[in-house]
Image (cartoon, rainbow, N blue to C red; front, side, top):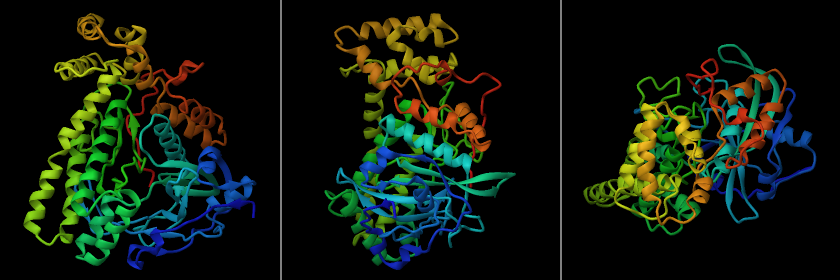
Length: 471
């Protein structure tokens, strides 16, 4: 066969209660829509014939060395407890160790029903596959820890949501697919043997420096604090920060109703299922703390002295705000071209964000315009911005390389929701050109594209008021 994947599987060596082994469902006519050759090379995957690769990553052919399985986990969804969730439309094919020495999962999304599908069809429409491919690869180009997309395959079949839609399968690559909800699943069942096995696996795989549950909690908490601060600095809204969508390795995972803000507002919500604003942009840090606390709770059964563990873990979780705040200020300080730390920096940042809220500024474009001196043009009352700009100008005295720093930290191009929707509509009609063009443009987010359409905010007619999961 003209495809070779150097599998080295470890999750499948955990006890049977961690997953259900099964193959993907058959699809009618798999064809490769997108193939991430650079990522494939990094993972040591060789695919000489993309038609044959489409058979593999569409789910019809199980490659040598694969160990396909659906993982089980639990989770809090919008704060409500679900005792059993799991991969309802995904299969872990296996793992590879790349040329960089990093272990990565290879997972098919949209590969058919599993025991965890909860009456769903286990399939994916083309739209969610296009969205996740573009979003995850854009996040990677922006330097955000994230899962990635290896392939997008059209299935030749239709899926029914509100209407009939073309089907597709995404191949997702991750450091692993272990979630807070994986720990919650075994903790809720009182299965300390499985919980200990999971702990040992995660420490060996992701945090070899951690010596036991407390150090693992601290390490996971730190990565989550830094990840959320990175999201916030880019105007990214995840949309479904349930505990089953919080990856233990600290990557952004599960790009469902996610979006980058156009006009800035701290309470901006896109997700059609987030009716209360639980996962609004400005709520993301507090939700992250809540999620880390649930992780801490899931580790308690492994501790001999429960009361002492609760006290220790509470202290660790309470350390989240300080780490997050330090990272958040550092990222926004860089966005303003500031390298030194001064006491008034927080006030300077918060005053700008308040002006942006009142002035209905486009988040990305205003920051991108700072080194050009045209940021005032992106706010409804330029005079108010000018007063703030004088304070910043005084703060910049003695700073070296401010413009270069801002150009490295303020992207010019983001995956704007209205453009993703346009790419989805065109792809559903059989035209993939915009998808491929957008993918290429998003690969260099700090460079000005030739066509201004990629940086222009949506017109009133183009605004997408809500995004959807696609399940």
